[in-house]
Image (cartoon, rainbow over all chains, first blue to last red; front, side):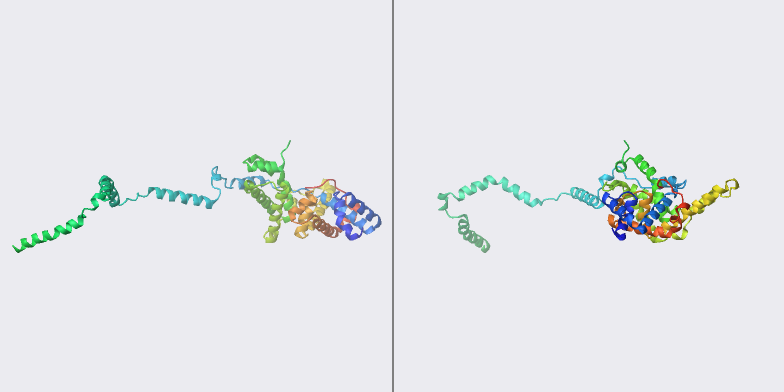
Amino acid sequence: MSCEKFSGTLIAYLDGRASAGERRDVEAHLKTCAACRERAEEFRRLWQAMDEAPAIEPSLGFDARLRQRLAAEPQRKSWAWLLPAPRLSLAVALLAILTLWVSNRQPVVEPVQGSEAQFRMIKDLGVLENYDVLKNFEPLSDLPAAQEIHDQSQPQQDDDTGSGTSN
Amino acid sequence: MARTDVQLMLDVKAGNELSFEVLLQKYRLPLVNFLCRMVRDQATAEDLAQEVFLRVYRARKEYTPSAKFTTWLFRIATNLALNSIRDGKHQQMQISIDAREEDETPLEVPAREKLAEDRLIERERNEMIRQAVYSLPEEQRVAVVLHKYHDMDYSEIGKILGCSESALKSLLFRAYEALRVQLALLVAKPAAHPAGEGRGI
């Protein structure tokens, strides 16, 4: 093992986290390299010196200040789960408003004319049926049409009128 | 059986405030120590530690246990510390923790002259170490503090710093090498420095 490769595993060897293979390699290198042996010893002494550093206790007011800050944190409302997302909530609210608005609108008044025409047609349905029967009744087809009778009778009326005016 | 940190955090998510109190009591000391070693000034470190807890509390409803709780906690703390250092707003008002301790504990006690001298030496040594750690580049400092004072494994530190384990080992080696050179007076003469047992926080 070279000194360079040794440096990559020295820390793990010293803190006891090296694998068995790494340990063997490091120990073999330490037997042959005085400089690395000295470095390893100095690392051990450095760690011992660092271990002597006392723990730092938090100041007396630490817990009180922290509790004060925690108490100032806004609490979630119990119904907050109903509002999974602000956009969704807004969409639901708008939909509800739209539904209310539509349902409260005045019903559109149908034109009276249409319903009266329908009513008259239903009322005259019997007459219309009779009209259809009469219209398609073959013996009656030989008779002059009503228009023709009207046309024929018109000159007489005109004559009567003319005579009347001349008088 | 004690509940794990993740279980406690899930309790907090469900609305159990007592579980948050348990987490707070468990991590207030490690967080303050970590942040003191990062930003040096204790008042700033305490402010940042409180901000970490507030962020955890604010994020409770969205918490998902995708990583170890400590990884999440110290990632927040690391980001806040690095931002604070980079902002530089606290660097002008560095209040020495030791200066505060000196104010609180008088050293001139004639009957205990030797003890006072020992304490003074110990204090100087600790201050040298703190200054050396504090002079490390930011990422090296995070790596050293989490490795040495919080006993975190490589994978967790790697996740906090966003680097691979091999990159972290290399980072740690460079950091300890810098400390070894800087603290040569402390580490080169073993007879003058009695070995301490156990790890600090």
